[in-house]
Length: 357
Image (cartoon, rainbow, N blue to C red; front, side, top):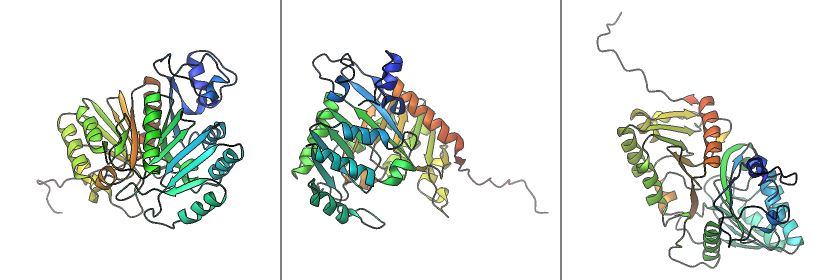
């Protein structure tokens, strides 16, 4: 995790060998003496803290940090992903295979819309000696975006492993060495890899297990502000809870991308605009991120869209973070995008006193 340590170094000591962190904006968590640091950290910084957590922002950070994480793997790479098509990612997986890393990939067999390249990718991986299976866990889609490296590092993401996600979209991921989060991520993968049934208890936010209760609970906990990145908002209960937040005086800001010819006021999110939320639309970068930041003190990042299918039927994963450094980076990115976005305004109401002329 060379690059993942630069920003930590900025707040602790300057480390010439730490290069990943500058682009990811990592922050040190509480130290747990019994927890080992991932090998890729310990090799370059024996005194590194035991838990590292950081934010990966695309397209700002580019694909380099993620590829370097894959290149740093020594023993295992487990990937559970909705879409995998990027050639540079595939090359990194084959490099890992060549140095003896066990690589396992779970794919969605029939993703929604567009051309389906998954069978071709499946064959490429299998013929190249990488273990690959179709993800059969979800009753609808396996929309999850999860990577576990060496059972020591986990990435909880809203990005697919595609060229657009890595180079064009607004995407977010949390990278962590927290053993509780890494252990849960590894158990989720193993559960789905072996096609088990039932819930998977742990601190990560999982669909269909805990997504709805956690997301709605976060909204209900807001006292001052809610900042939301969304690709789609259709779930009636989600909308109702945001409306309740507006009723108790919470400032709600939403960033989405507007499709060509789409009138956002005619969409379900238009109900929130009419209730007082500020909605800004941004075409570039395309908003694929899923974020709920509450009072600037907690943030949810995950693969979950705010739809009933995503929360109740898909396999999805997310995480709630509270470290001040990471929240500050999320705040800066959100403020930048919100300021560039086009406000969606209500039609000017008619003046009942106006007269025809």
